[in-house]
Length: 620
Image 1 (cartoon, one colour):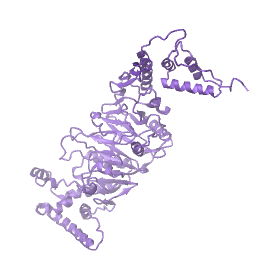
Image 2 (cartoon, rainbow, N blue to C red; image 1 turned 45 degrees about the vertical axis):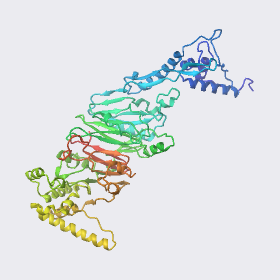
Image 3 (cartoon, rainbow, N blue to C red; image 1 turned 120 degrees about the horizontal axis):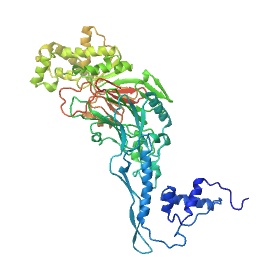
Image 4 (cartoon, one colour; image 1 turned 90 degrees about the vertical axis):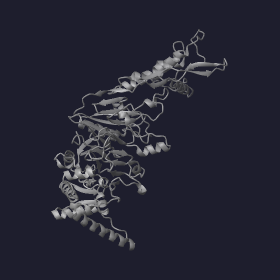
């Protein structure tokens, strides 16, 4: 046996540590040792304790000197300004921070905006009985928003943006698929960093600055403008436990489409100042990393909402921006329209899509270009993606006899000048558009508030003094009263009455007269549930719980995945997805407007995305 102890191999790092630590003449204080080794003060102390423990365990390692009261040999302790060491600690931290901010593909161009200053603190001295100044933890703050060099002309380019939490592993399957899709599209990947710790730049906690090695070159710590109308807010370090991550950030976008890195998916439509101009959107990305959360209420809620996801941002040659969510399944696979990405392979699979919830139709106010882009043109969304079923909300508008305009003589005159007096002709327009849709896809009509306005027109008897509409109104009232008679008998007999849609009756009445077969249309009557692949698709969105008015927040509180319309302003809140409207001009909307031409696409794996049209196009 070797009496000097078991053989031990010291690493070059260990040997350098021992050399510096045991040289008090050159490095009289631990702060000097830390600065030379580029370690934190606490890390030096921890490493010294480990080395002494190895010595006590019998390992053949050099002994470390005691630094209690160490002075330069042969010299009396000279007074040292504690600010020297405070500045040394600040300088070391500053170098680490600036290196982190500038070492990726997207370096921050103004790292000096992160200021690190040395500080002094007062501590009681037992020797003197008075407070004495010593160096404290460096203070860090920002003087400006961190910026990354942008892309001035993004026409024809694509970007995939996502988020990452510090000190968390990357989801390997999703990362592999995201890289494969980026390569397939020739897209740039950008990762926005976030941290769970409250002090991002803590001196003695390097984990707050630690990100998975796979994504380090893609990190973007600053605000990155891409073109004139889009911003990636990589500087927005949000806690992953934030319940409404963009609830107060709509004004931060300053009129531009903005994407924020965050684990919870949320999207809001920010009103434009002109109702003819489509609103822009702000949204979150989802994450490329798996979660790491403290098991308290906020953390457990965040685990429930944590989403592996990204946003694809693409620009057409006109410079219009299109954003869609790429939400991963449990195996890291994801869909993007007709593309399906799994195991690093990109396939075209038209069976990806379960259905599309189209923006509210309001057929009598049809917008020709948007209808073409949706289902009429060969390159329309419905035809190009071979969508098997569409859900249509507010297919009827009741423009001609809206109850809001009963006492509006000017509106009545406008309708007359446009030769739109006939309610039967407006219903006939619905018949024709349903016939047209059925030539391409299956159709489900979700009975909506504008649809049931026809019933109100009949119930209030307004047709009776309404010229051309009298005979059609009589037919509808007769059918409606027959149903109410049936309801009365069912109630007396203790039976559950069947539901009834007067618009469905009117549409089928006119279709039969015209010899048009609409038997392929499915009608979902007002107020009834219809679930497709775990997602509620039967509610328009205007009726809330317990008789209240329907709101997105109210539906989100139900805790059920839903697709709705009604609001005309696209939104994602918790598991509620809101489609927009096909025509931004409805006549009654004036001033700032959050409306947009947006459909909801639901995939077979239960994931969804919003597709927003720009100037008659639904993607780049």
